[in-house]
Image 1 (spheres, rainbow, N blue to C red):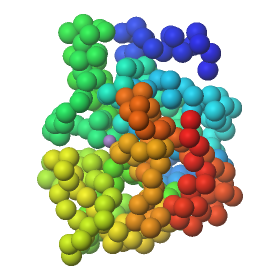
Image 2 (cartoon, rainbow, N blue to C red):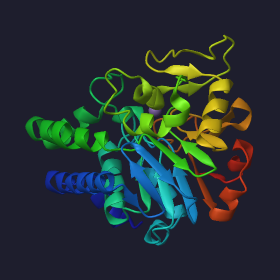
Image 3 (cartoon, rainbow, N blue to C red):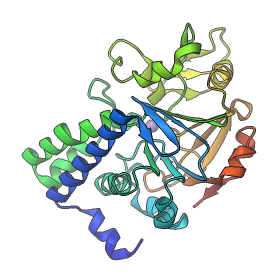
Length: 316
Ligand SMILES: [Mn+2]
């Protein structure tokens, strides 16, 4: 990506920012209405994909434009995304903490608009609905700073919150990967036969059902108690143990749960290789490392656990 191009993304004018978000909202509405994406299906908040020709996964970005552009450059994104059988999947947490949330939002919208079949935008806890308050959500203030209070309110409340509602909550890549931002929900009764429906409608049900909240906030831990979960120290969401990971892998017929949500040295492996955490920013977390996953159809097909998958992680 050229420097000039990059500069123009850093501070889009209010008009071009609004136009870009509106266009993305339309693309996402259409995707949900038709259920169609090349190489898979979309059903509400659930994306079901065949193994793509090439796959890139990006974890938490948190407004870190430098790491983000490095990843796009590394994968030669224009060539990569021009093939609709390739997929780049973002695990969410595009915004907050770093210095360039607006620029990142603008670029990910640009990518979804221009390459709708090659890009999956998932929802992180920083893209949560207003019913889930949490600290360090600085985007609304940054927007008011850049565009003024009145216009800023309109951009955030009418445009950005609508965009967030349309993001994907979980992506299944057939036989291989199950992707979420935070973790798998702890619930187990009657989930087995209809986990697709549970996730597809998790946003619509989020006021009285915890599925969405847990997908966005949960973390994998070693749990000693018999239910294999405990409340999270984050104050929202839960810690899930190895048995719950095993259950979800069996239910979804996949081999690894891939998630973001926790800073680490690029990646970490939990639950004996059943869970891989990927982290893709550095600016707001200078003591940690940014990384991304990149692999081909045949490479992904050969992955049997998180230890195999880690072989395809590049630190930047
Ligand atoms: Mn997160």
